[in-house]
Structures are given as structure tokens and as C-alpha cells.
Amino acid sequence: MKVKFKNWKCNIKTGFYKNGFKAITLIDAKDGDAIAVATVNLETPKAKVTSKDHVYIKDYSENTGMVVALKEAGVIEYDITNQYYAQFVVINEYKLTSKCIALWKKDKN
Image (cartoon, rainbow, N blue to C red):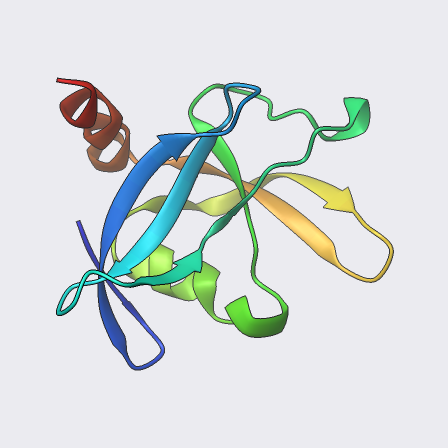
């Protein structure tokens, strides 16, 4: 999948955090450099993802605009499914699209 984030055209790299939550990294389509980690691994009891096909998206600080980029690329659905209130930010949980979920299956093979 292709994502335009700020001035970069990126490919999605799928992966997992150690606790099994899905992870998304944006990789520069030109040179293969890592541009941004789109997801947040929240390992607190209050912040468990509500489904294995959901992710928390980092849309603050240097990642401002990430949610819009991922929605426009068809990576995440439009509705927020859950919120986690950190000290200074709200981190929203989103459902992955079926097109994006298929990437994990493809990348495993």
C-alpha cells in the first residue's frame, strides 16, 4: 500500500510488537529509509486494543497528520473505536481496513 505522508511517498511495512499488537512503519518509496512509525504500542491494562485488527495511531508531535494520511490511503477506517488519554495527548484507536489486514497475511508468506 502507498501512503503520502507530509512530503514523502511511502510504502507500508507491517510488523508486530512483542506483545502481539500490530505495528505499521512508513518506508520511503524511493530509498527505503524509515520515515515514521505510525502506530503506538500501549502496554497498559487500560489501553489494550479492542480487536486484533485495531491499532493505536500516533498523530501528534512529528507524526501530526498521520491519521489523515492513513485514512486517505485506505489503511484505517474513519471512525475512532477507542481512546487512550496519556499525559498530554489523546491517542485514538482505529480499525484497519480489510485491504490493510491482508498485508499481514501476505507479509507472513
